[in-house]
Length: 175
Ligand SMILES: Cc1cc2nc3c(=O)[nH]c(=O)nc-3n(C[C@H](O)[C@H](O)[C@H](O)COP(=O)(O)O)c2cc1C
Image (cartoon, rainbow, N blue to C red; front, top):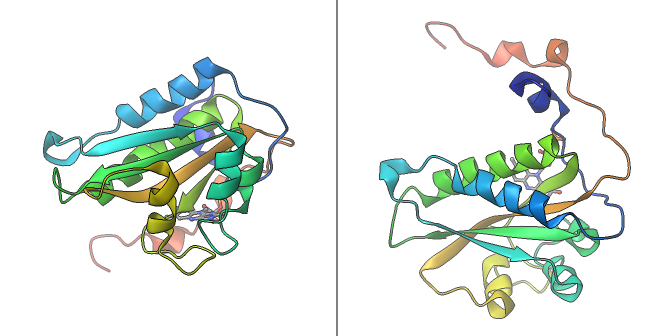
């Protein structure tokens, strides 16, 4: 088993996937990682839409100009929504959940990538969120922060290296 540090070094954004579906138990474990994320004020405002339908994944790949193409070849996607009526920290909550799921996918040997939706535009010029809302049917109190695309990896990507980290970004005592 990898240590958390090894897992963090191995985590990469993977945008090319092998054909076929992923094991249902792996997808469920990734979703559990999302549910395990901490939540500001314990409000738990997040909702998750799991998409495995190929036609829907293809449609979703047009939710951004260029940046969501990998969804067309993904085996699954998890759309992360926040109920804005439940918490004003839903963006932070969604980010933590995204990271937990992204790391869990790595742990399970799957490739995954963050697709940003909030504040972004679809190919047709609408807000990415409105584009997705039309066919994913989420209510107006739920806003979409991001999507995690998931699939079996074709190749293991190069891991990050500890000695290449930008340590100059660390400031001690004062900026
Ligand atoms: C907030 C955020 C938004 C991102 N949005 C996208 C995206 O829309 N499409 C995409 O292909 N990658 C996206 N990424 C992945 C980044 O491009 C990637 O993390 C970065 O290039 C570093 O590479 P690595 O993840 O392999 O370490 C996003 C990552 C983050 C954290």
